[in-house]
Amino acid sequence: MVILMPQTVTNKLTVEATFIAHFLGGSNRLLQLMKKNFQELGLKKEDCLELSWAECAVFWANMDHTSAAEVLLDRNSYAASFLVRKTDYVQTPISKLGWESIFNKLVELGKCCVFLNPYGGVMDEIPADATPCPHRAGNLFKVQYWINWSEGDPEVDGRYVNQTRVLHEFMTKYVSKNPRCVYLNYRDLDIGVRVGSGVSGYNSGKVYGEKYFKGNFDRWVKVKTAVDPDNFFRSEQSIPTLPGIKNAEACLLISKI
Image 1 (cartoon, helix red, strand yellow):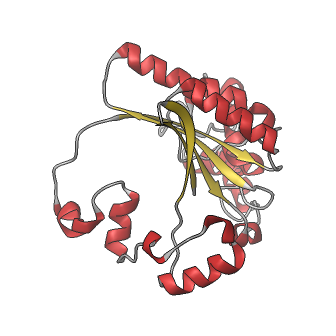
Image 2: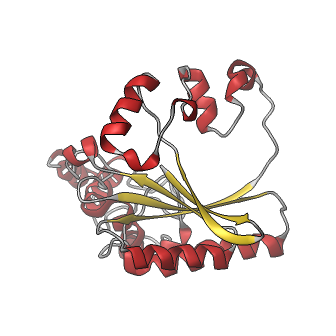
Image 3: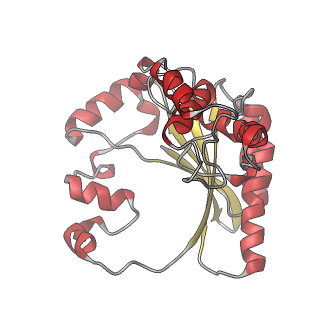
C-alpha cells in the first residue's frame, strides 16, 4: 500500500509518499526479494517489523502494536472520530505528468490523503464472476480517498467531506469508466441511492449496483428476489428486487445462476 499525504516540510506544503506492505515471512527473505525486484525503495532491516498475528491486527487498526494483548482485551473504545472514504480503480498507467497534477491537487486541498492498494498476482487469477466482488484482473490498483478528523463541527465536517468529493471528481480522467467501479466496503452514497420500489427501485439500484458489482449485479437481484421478495432487509444502497417476479419464478432464476 502507498499513502500519499500532504505534509509540511521546511515550511512548505508538499506530498509525502509512504510505502507499507504486509509480508508473510521473515524480514531476511523479504530483503532478498526487495533487493532483487524493487531496489528503488532501498529497504533496510531496520525498516521491517516482525510481528505476531495479534500484533499485526493491532498495527493495521492504527493502534499500539507493542501492547497488542492489552489493546485487544480493552473493552473501552478509543475516542470517537469522523471519517470519509471514497474509492476508485485504476486500469491504465497514470503518466508522470498526471501524478504531478494529482500531487498538486492534494497540496491544494490540504488534508485529503490517497491510499493506493496494488492489485495483480492471485487477484488476476480469480474470475470476475467467481465471487460477488468483480474487481479482479485488469485493475492495476485501487484508489482510496481518505480523511479522518475529530472536531465534530458541522462547518468542518462539510469542508472535509467536500475535499473528498472534489478530489474524486478531479480523478475522473485517470480511473475506470463505464462503469466507474467502486469497492463495496467503503459505502459511498454520492454514487447513487435506491429510490422507490418495483421498476424505479431496480433502475435506481442499478446505478450504484453496477459500480459495486459490475456484471454480478443482476445475479444479486435474483438472489434478493428469491430470499427477500418483500424487501424487508433494505438500506439506501441495498439490492433491489425484480419487479413483477413471483417467489417461485425467482427461485427458478436463482437455480440457473
